[in-house]
Image (cartoon, rainbow, N blue to C red):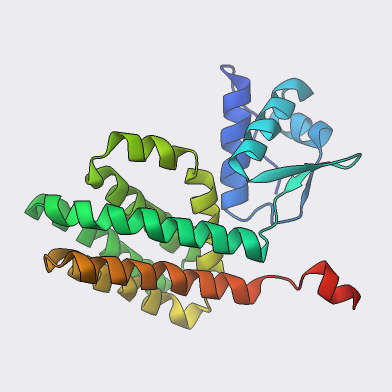
Length: 227
């Protein structure tokens, strides 16, 4: 789990990047304490850039600070899951409507290649590769929507969406990875049918299916556990 020492440069940026990757890769599961002194020693830096990086990740929703206990990897609550998934549905339905008007043979091939890679990774049981390609697929749709202000907005949500996608992939049993990859074929076909309503409906189903998987894997609320 140890992190690799960093080179010189903007250390706070590098620390934030290293920790963000480690969290999204699952090396630091939700609830893991992030001790500044330990992280600083592993990365070969002082505690100052580590503290700044943890503050940035807290702003992104990936970490959280608790009184007298420092930082830990954020845990997803049912409410946060519902808010993020419903917000994604609204935004990404808008995205697919715009992408459907802008797809070219070249960009279609690009998206197909990503989905084909997902299929191969799913057959191999490579969860990390499926997650990486899934994230790239959705990011590419945002780019193809060609809406500058929308992309400025989603930049603030990128880490949360990445954590959402990783949790959704991690909640899949190995035998359903291929089914998950195939859902992107369905979504892409809907985009190519030049039917915005169908594309929007398919995107909503796609995101809600991921939310259902994550919801089933969430721990019981503390209130329920105390009863």
